[in-house]
Length: 79
Image 1 (cartoon, rainbow, N blue to C red):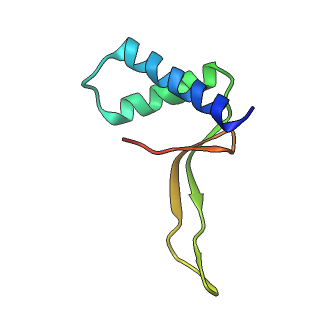
Image 2 (cartoon, rainbow, N blue to C red; image 1 turned 45 degrees about the vertical axis):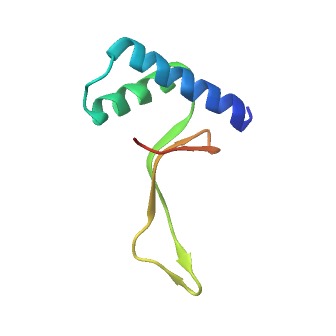
């Protein structure tokens, strides 16, 4: 599955979530339901995935945190 196909599935899942729940809920609710919708569609994903950041010869003490990494190819930010 390429990045475009994965993106279409993610967008379709997000539209389904919004269609059923509508506007006005907390972001955390939409996030949880989107994870469930992706799971129902058989899509692999990681939540809040840490990514180490290196600068020259050091590893920074704070990792970058990806909100959602889908199929190890597509990063989905919150908002």
